[in-house]
Length: 425
Image (cartoon, rainbow, N blue to C red; front, top):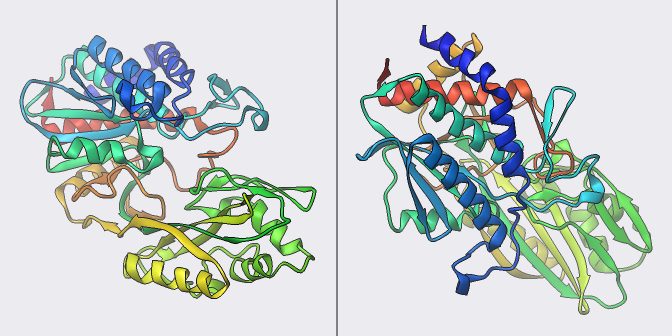
């Protein structure tokens, strides 16, 4: 039975798979200074990771193309694909001092794989590549072709996929291991906003990227320590910036205003005039993720994920007005409208069936605040890479993925490709 053969193949190739993932994790593909004149839009690290992906795809027997160091496209056969599997090889930065083991070194302990990108998105990328290798070595024949697309700039705005889509169209069905199981068919909208105001005499440094809950904030000569989490899941972390603001006893009006707009422990933005929810996506989230003093100005950043019954214009307008009333200038504001694929679609129903085959339990659609790689792709859904109840420190120190979840990624993608592309031996 093919299902059992796939499982046996994974078990017999486990050491090889982990060795490959170790090679990819060892590449620091976080964004550095861009070098467009050298054809490296996301820096040397991203380009090196994409090179690794392409060479691995070639060894497997895929037809590969490097599209200007933005993405690697790899086809099962030389014909138009009906399915695209979309993942990314870039990662968010890692501060080695905050990790218990080196971030760019794969370590296995407590039945988990540790390393930057282990869950987002290098681990799932390797799982997909080896699922494809498994199908080829088991002699699975597909009625229709599919394409793997691996990008190098997901973590800094998905410009890699925009570049790709300006040159090639995605097929009708697109899935990505950049979210959660069983099937993530509904994604909240997002607002990322930067603001500032003149402010002398303050020395504050909190947060590094706008889509991560900060675990450290240096202010008032003190270090405030929290717990990092993904920006879309502030309830999983402890925000060091709002912790500082909650304990601030000074007379600076700007900091006082921020403390009122973003109370420590509040996650839905109700104090900033937001607090919306709907039945499908639940409560919205709102987090102050950056606060620093720089050249006489106080600079801040906000990460908002809002329900699908609201719009970018409405949410960005509310938070902008609140900040301006508090004395701040909005310097930049960008984001996405919500994304939704109906549960009754063939793609979603097929993936739910695959989930049930692998896990032995009935799957259901879920909604999240995270912006996945298919957010701006009509009809695209996230299928993995983690489970909603897992806390894998995505974007934080000691990022990891359970060995059982990594194995599920492999099995899910092998069966999804078979089911969606008509595979048989």
